[in-house]
Every structure is written in structure tokens, then in C-alpha cells.
Length: 354
Image (cartoon, rainbow, N blue to C red; front, side, top):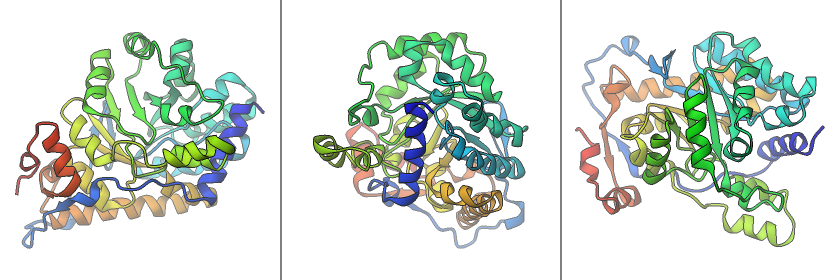
């Protein structure tokens, strides 16, 4: 096994066993407006959405999580079975390990996803640092799992606090523009816990990107994860940057009018999903809540997905939202999120339609 492959397994074990989440998503400052007379039949609420030309039964994905080591193959299998059964979608973890070290067991940890989810929306995943060095790696990642889209992940916070991290960010935009002009599937730019601002959203849109996964602060902190691996001064730096980044809700309001936006980062129930959609996200996604269930069985993953989806449906019912689109604006914004919108020249009242 390569160093990258072993590191992937180490990350999974840390996420299963340790506290790894950061503080404050921004959803704490979002209130959904209760409608005491919803005038809806709960059973007629429509959760279906279309994303990048693919239909989903609900506006929710299992976010990129794992792959790249034989011991996580079963996890990806269980995730795939679940999204296939429920008509949802998922991303795989970074495929760097399988491309660097194309051993059968490592590749199998990724291709098993398409084997067990032949009809689901599946996105491939590779880091911007790898794309910048070798753009052909993207096509290999897509072909490996017959992906519907490619997520190019931005993880410079994690790289910056790793002693062995890749800290050269020169040439990323040029590589991204070249990739978008040549790849046969849509490109999603995905942050991994530190968030995407309006400025960055505009930059990647200009490069040809099709969607943004904001990957905001409030969920898994990869600086926090690295604290458990680091020693000496690097461990202290990791602690210092544990809560670094732009909260997820802030990212949604920044990116929603620029590109179709996936809200990831601290989404922990259906109410969080509803708040994200009401702010303007196209979809929501989450990873950490599905990790432990996926180590047990596909049925446990399905149970957790149904928890998120039912919670969303109840929130839609109680806000008189027959469709996902109807949720938009049915919120009141307070606190730091309101200040963020104002500091960017916006008006928080424009996000409310009550």
C-alpha cells in the first residue's frame, strides 16, 4: 500500500473515533418561518430535483468520504447500495491513491460504487494539486467509476498544516480552465471544510466550472483531523486552525447566485437541509453522519438517509412548501450571518419572502 492509501485509512479511523467537527455553521442564525395553516397534503410534497442533468428523488447527496484502501471497500459498497435504492447520489473520496498505486484492491474500493449503484448520480473526486501537475488524471478518475461529474477538491487548509502537504497553489486556475474545456462531464469545485467565498465562486465560474460544493466550516475539520496525526509544532498549528474557514451558511449566500450550489459542512438533519435550500442552495450533502452506519450495513445507511429526508419533508410541510423551490426565502436571518450579508453589500431581508 502507498503512503497515500495508508493515510486514507488513518483518516477514516480518526473520524470514527475522535472529535473532528468545527464550530458554527451559520445555520444557527437562520430561522425557518412556521406556517400554522400549510394547506398541503403531506403525501403530495414533491422532493424531486434535477442536478447537472440528473434526476434525484430528493435534494441530498452523500458527500465524498472514502476509498483508496482495501479496508474501506465495504463502506463504499454500503453507501452505493443505499443511494441506488433511494434514488439519490454520492461522491467518492479522493481517487489519488488508486491512480498513484493502481493495485486491484485499491481500485476496487472505488469501482464498487458504480457496481452497486448503476443508476445513481456518482461524482468522481481528485485534488486541484493533482490536476495542476497532470490534467490527464481527471479523465482517469472519471473513467474509473463511470462518473456523472468530477469534483475537484480544494483542501489547502489541510495541505498547509500537514508537514508533508502540497503547499504550491500556483497555476490552479489555469489548470481548472483547461480541464473544464476538455473533460466530457461537468466539473464541480468542492471545498473540504474551509468554505468558498463569492470571489472564489466567480473565479471558478469564469474558468468554466458547472457547480460549487461550498464545503463550509461547521462540519468535519480536516485541520482537526490532522491534529491527531501530527506531532510537535504541527500539532499546535492544527489546533490553531481547527475552526478556520467560512461557515457553510455564509458560503451559500455568497455562491447561490453565481453557480448551482451544494451545501456541505455541518448538515446534520433535515432541518439543516431545509435551511440550506431556503438560503438558495440547490442540494445539500453530508459525509460524517453516514460513516459509522456504512461500517455496519447498507440498511443502516438507508435508515440515516431516511432520517434526513423525512426531516426535510416535515420542514417543508410546516413551511407550506409543496416543492423544494417553494422553500426559498421562508426564513428569518439573524446574528453573524446577517452581519456577513450586510458587510458584503447585501440585504438580509432579500433572502426572506415571508
